[in-house]
Image (cartoon, rainbow, N blue to C red):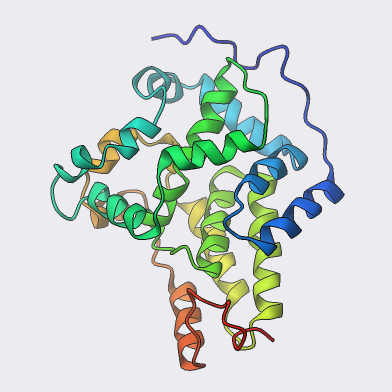
Length: 259
């Protein structure tokens, strides 16, 4: 089915690189990692010609057009936990629901955070693709095994950078990793973990290109193998280092953890 929306709405402005503004939003995010509104501001400040080419090529492809017709929006699907839990045990769906409930998250909540940024929306295929990247972020965590700890967030962004080459993901992954390395007193392979995540993102099938309804029904380990998603060895080693040093990698905000 052809999508009648234009690839890019003529009213959509050409993005401009604004490094200092991006850094200001990054500092706000560092101060409160739950303030994900800042990420969406940074997206507009750090455009990438390479990610734009990937985006437009996918939207023009047969797979992209099929997914636009089959999955025009994902939040309702992802937040229907009763339906997801009716799928087989051990599936991506069960792991996803467990992750979202443990973290107190919802796909609708991420949409609301993105809307706080006040970014205009356009009725074009670029908007569909951008929404899909946003809505599959937590699936990236589930599929890769990266948690929502400080390093896990940087690694999930590094993985996404490897898949889509968005400058904002790369900036957040490496700058956030540097902040973690600088502030946490226990040494751990932070940069090795992020670099590994980027490589895994490059080597694996893109999450955004998967039929999400079908992916959710797959056994988790089978999905990882099919998509060629490697084990997060350096990330797990970093957690081991933190715990050996008496730190909980999911809670560095206890004063003693910070240099």
